[in-house]
Length: 144
Image (cartoon, rainbow, N blue to C red; front, side, top):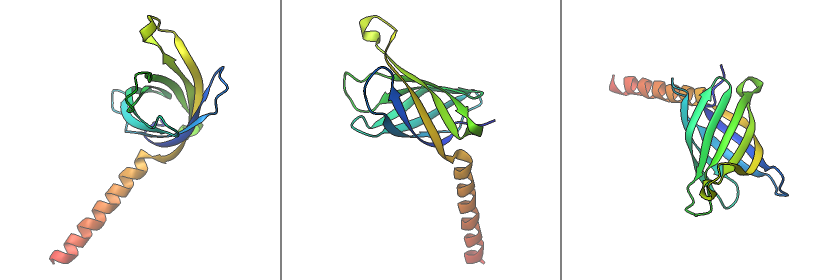
């Protein structure tokens, strides 16, 4: 089964608003046995870095909340739902901003998003193992 772990490049689009799509780069951790994962997202433009909260993968379905690090009162969390497609090389779904301040849990702004995988968690593990193996072989050569 495909996992969300790894690096992604994508963009999000706005429904019903004449705004240009915004590009982003995302990195997601390995998925735990409970389906939970962590991550960071870097948006192009002034909003910048965000942290991923309440993230879970169940099968091919992915759900998470993006919370911007920029301290602005007007910035509220963004809820993302998506699906892994194309053997785990593509993520696609919908996003929504819910304005709880007005006593309503209805989405005030919505859109869709898509991201393509740039690297997988397995590649990172392989590089770390390879580096460890080289380090151990150097130790054997220099200590003998």
